[in-house]
Image (cartoon, rainbow, N blue to C red):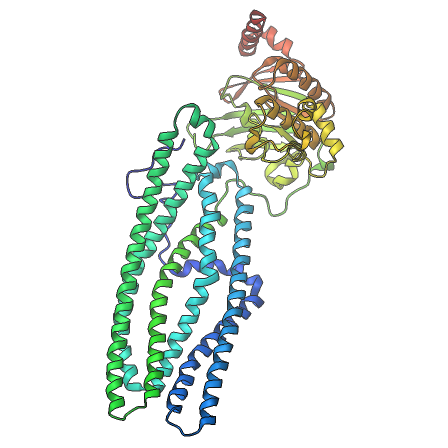
Length: 604
C-alpha cells in the first residue's frame, strides 16, 4: 500500500511538488493542436456565436422602437416593430441552437482525441515512468481532468466569448445611446476588475490543489481495490478506508476553499455591477423627466447596461472555470510531454530475415532507478545461439528477471549493450524486436475477458482451432472445456475465476500461440502441480526445439535439460554449464541442487 499522506496541506511529491505550477490561463493554448483538425467546425461554431451575440445586441433597439412606438399614431408601424422583434427573437433561438450543437460536438470530439492521445502515450511508457507516478493518478487525469475540460470547451469557452462580444458591443451601443450615462457606468469598471484579478489568482491555486488531491485519492482507491483480497485477508479494510477518507477530506477541504473564494468574488462583482446599474438608472430617470431622452432610449440603455453587467458577472464566474481548466490542461499536457527513459529511434532498423533469435549481452551494467545504490546486473556478458535453450538460475534478487526486463527493453542498461541478431535494441523500434518474443511472466496477467480472448491476446488473428491447439499444448484445454461456457467463459477481472495454476497455463498458451522465434519463461511453472508441470514441460520442450528459449527458474527440476545453465549471484554470472557439469563442479548451483533434490526426496 502507498505510504500515508503527508500531514501538510499538499499531496506527495509525485502528485504535486515535482510539477511546475501554471500561473497563467495561457495553459489552455495546449488545446489548440487538438482543435486544429476541426477548423471547419470551429469556424461554424464561432460564426454562430458571433451571430447570436449580434442578434442579442439588436434586441434592445427593437424594444426601444416598440416602446417609443406606443406614442405614434400609425398602427401599421407599431405592428412592424413587433414583427421585427419577433423575427429577431426567432433568429436568436436558431443561432443559439446551432451554436450549442457545434460547440458541444466540437468539445466531445476534442476531448475524445485528448483521451486517446494520453492513453496512447501512457500505454507505451516504460516501467521507470510508473515508478514515479501512480496508475490511479494517470487514470484520474484521463477521466476527471478531461471531464472538466469537456464542460469548459463545450460550454464555458463559448459562453465566455459570447459575453466578451456582448460586453464590448454593449458598451459601444451604450455610448451611442447616451455618452453621459455610459461614462458613469465605466467609472465602476476598475472597481470590478480588481477583485476579479486578486481573487482569481487564489482560485487558480486552489483549483490546481483540488485536482491534485482528487488524483491522489484516485491513486489510493485504485491501489486498494486492485488488492482487495489482500486488504480483506489482513483485515486492513478500516485503515485503507481511513487513508482514503483522509485524502478525500483534504480534496473536499481544498474544493470548499475554492468554492468559498469564488462565491465571495461573485458576490463582490455582482453587487458592484448592479449598484452601478441602479445609480445609472436613477440618473437616466431624471433625464427622462427633464425631457433630455425618451423612455424608449432609457429602456434601451438600461437593457444594454444589464447585458453588460450580466456579461461582467458571467465572465467573473467563467474565469474561475477557465482557471480550473487551465490546471487540468497543464496536467494532461504534462503526461503527453512526459520524458521516458526508453524511446524509439526515428528510423528503426529491421531484424535480419525477420529474426533468428540470437541474443547477446555485452558487459551490461544496470541499476533500477529506485535502487541506484545496488547493481542489478554488474558486467554481465553472454550469448544465446538461435534455437538454444538457456536457463538462468540463482537466488532471489540475483538479476535473472532483470535480464528479461532489459531484453524486452523495458529499461536500458547504464553501460554495455543488449543485441538481437547482431542489432542493438536501441537501434530498432520496440515493436520490431518485441514481435519476435513471447513472454510468460512470473505473475501472469489475465484480462477481464473470455478465456479464448485471453489466449488470443498472443496473436489476435488466430483462429479458434489455433487457440485450442495452444491450450492443449499448455495443458489448459481440459479445465477450460469444463468452465460454464467453455472457452467463452468470462474469467473476471485479473482472472479471479481461475486458480493460480490455471492462470499460468492460460499465459503459457498465449505465448505458445504467439509462435515467436524467442520464448521467455519467467518462473512459468511455479504455480503448477506436479502433473501439470510435467505436461507443460513436455510442451515447452517441443516448443523450444525450433526457437531460442530463455528460462528463469528457482525449481531446478525444470531446467535440468537446458542446453546451458547460467548461474547468477549478486548481479553477476558466477558459473556456466550443463546441469551435470555444474553439479560436479560444486559451488552455488550444486548447493541449490542438493537442497532442492534432497528436500524433494525427503518429501516423497
